[in-house]
Image (cartoon, rainbow, N blue to C red; front, side, top):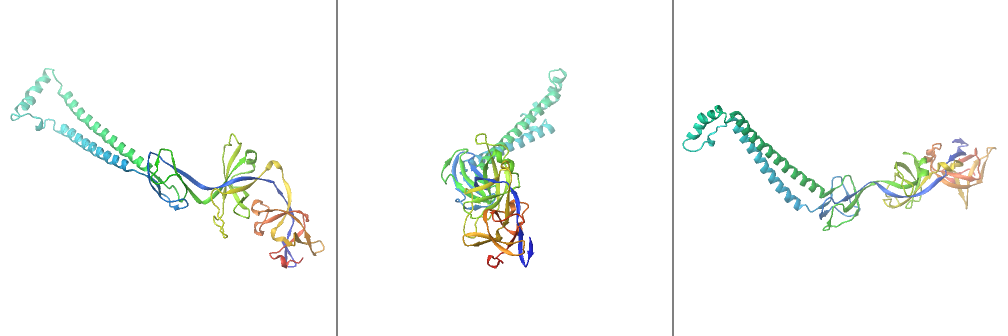
Length: 371
């Protein structure tokens, strides 16, 4: 760019461009999930209708869990019984360990038979080899220890039952993993569902993408982060999209690769046009095998529309201005070509009427051009 006689001008240059291939795609939300039933039951509540927005961790759909809650109360009672049995077994073991000859073991008759057993019977049996007091003692303690282990196993089993029921209670609720909106309901309150049956679709529509099935031969012209042009059927002007993800495996039947492009655009335009999931889109994918072609590009602001034919104001070799009629091609977004200055605005290709090196006057107001 330069300045002559207080006018801004642009030097026409040729740029190498790969001719793009226009492919059809669909606008999709960046994040989308389908909540499915994890257990049989009846739908008790649904948070809202399609289009309503909900915060993260909101319960979107819930099944009737009264039967599960009843089973949980029964499991908690079983756990309490197992806990009481464990505490009793530990107490019995402690008593046997510290007081093996406790009075409650003695029979009636003022305890004389029990006393004779302790003084005479047991020592004589040991001397005669008919019994081993130490072994008998260890056996008794082992029996009480076994009762503790059994009580512990019962407690663990009861706790496992509670955990299983709690897991089913959690599965009876579908919780929003992120902030978003309900985009489709498959069931209504009162419906009976089976495991695996879809309940509703939930998506974050604040960030959108375009999903395109790209022929395998064209994928080599794309890489993550690359920007290309796209058109939406609800918008008049092309937009710039960025390659967000290239799937690693091609479809074995169609031989295409799924590619997702980030769509950075306001969902609602000033004129009321709405951009949302499911809408039709077209993406221009470069075809590197088609070779390069040179195109003359000029700023769109340099085009003067007078009558039916477009023209441009050119500073000729004699330092004079002349109006030239031109034939224009397609509009070019400067973000797609690194050699262009994006501060000038959009560019347009020139098919005839100019040559490389011409000085074109660029003016914001075509009525004030020197031509």
